Amino acid sequence: MSWKRRGRNVAHGCLLLLAVCYSLLPIYFMFIQSLKTAEEDVVGHPLIVTRPTLENYRHLFEPDPESEFLVRPPVAFPVWVQNTVVVFGASLALTLALSLLAAYGLGRLRPPGWRWSRRLLFATYVVPHTLLFVPLYELAVRFGLDNSQLALVIVYPMLSMPFCVWILSAFFQTLPREIEESAYIEGASRVAAFLHIVLPMSRPVLVAAGLFTLGTISSDIVFASILLHSSEIQTVVAGLGAMDVSLEELTVLAGINLAGIPLILLSALFARGYVRGLTAAMVEGA
Amino acid sequence: MAEGPIRAVPVKSARDCPGRRPQRAPRRREVVAAYLLTLPAFLLVLGVLAYPVAWQGWVSVTNHSVYLDGPPAFVGLDNYRRLLGDGEYWRAAAHTAAYFVITTIAKLVVGVALALLLARPFPGRALAFLAVFLPWAYPGGVTIIGWYWTLNPPLIAPHSLLLGRLKWAVDGWLGFGAYDFLSVVLFNVWRGGSFTAVFLLAGLNAIPQELFDSAALECKAGWRRFWLVTVPLLKRFLALAVFLSLTTAFADLANIWVLTGGRIMFPIIGTHAYWLAVKGGQFGAAAAVSLSLVPPLVLALVLLFRLFDPPKEEPA
Image 1 (cartoon, each protein chain N blue to C red):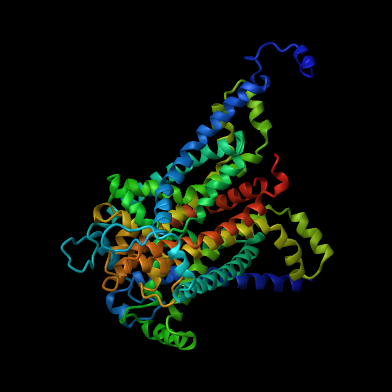
Image 2: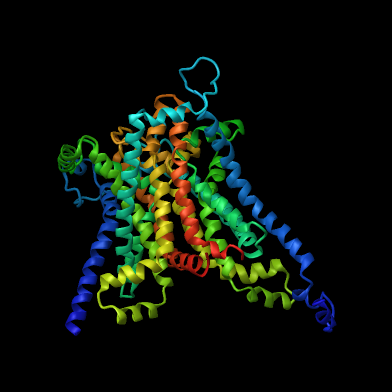
């Protein structure tokens, strides 16, 4: 029995190792590439770096607007990072705030037609995004939002909000009513009960919604590239995407890794909350 | 009549006991408040989408094209009718279906496997979980640029020779462009499988351990147990994962565009529409191609809703 058990543990461990390698190999590969000198990039081993250098990362911080081939970023990398933080932060805040309000309205107050309203919102996922950028760009130009970060801040919540409203309202729907009602009996107003009781209780689901939003908007490349075209206001993905890749592969890989670091930290902090939030929303609710 | 006895109960005043106010007036206020709270989210999502969707719908029934002198004319359903006899379109549709089926099955297999691996506690679980989570969390928009050079290295990279040979082998076996198709599938599965795994893990966590324990007593074969107990309990999660996979597979444009460097040999509906519009300038036809995706997606959505709130709950 104990042998069988030990055997099973070893098998589990091996499979886990395989899973971790599978998940991390591409990231590892990009990381290793980014540490290589140009020389080693040509003749070295694909998975090992013998003389690691931070040269590629240095290039990111030394912009060269005169460069004809865009082998270096036209503006310093921190500018793009800052733009990304601003755009993502604003999109995230807008998504969560509006989703919370709508989800509370639909899942808790349940006005007539709440079920269909929620479905309608979720149904926007069936709109094919292929050509969306053409009329959206036209719209942005008409409103003077062409080449403006505000345009992205308006478009991004459109991508993430239906899912966020869905899981948040599913969660609110099943939160026992007594929880708030006891607060009303104490004399609390609806707003106070929401702020002090419902909001703290929905934190895991909010974390899940927030991470989903970040994952969704950080995988966008089309809207960012189309709506932002001057390098000073581009986000990381739009900026790196515009660089001449074949000539400065290593610099861009370095940029990808730098952009990945904060995402890794965020994941490490919130990944478990993400799972808990999804569980809470999908099972207790829906 | 029924209200009589209740009123007889000595309630001090509505102010002291707001929870027991008579139902009607507050309910009306509640409904108004609910609509007001819901409004901003709807305005934003539907507001951003309204014009683009209307534009696409209108353009799809015109002969809008850059080669046209003068304004586009209404042509009715001609664009759609032409699709039916268009070999290119059906080729793209077949690729889309293949792309969806292949990636979805692969993502579900990878996702279920990873979720089951992580389901039970073991030392270092948090780190393993983080590793599995990263492919999705790592910024997809930039990661794909990295993938492109990894799979299609410029002439000078050390692994160029190896991957070049692989490309020849795959293309020789399955036809020109198969390698690019495969690289898109790989990226989709790598990133989407991670999302599915985390999603299903959340589902597994929700299943009480006792259910598994009693299932283990009833049925010794783990495989059977998986099909008879785990899968039905995860049904909702699986359905949502499949739906999200469907929308990405159908709409996938950026990934394919970037990963194949625009040299698309296996066009799917999304890229076909993009090609028609941006390279061919035929916006009318492109819009029709793109909108032809809507019916299957709506069908999938209806199935999904059925699963999520079954009709019997409707009166609630």
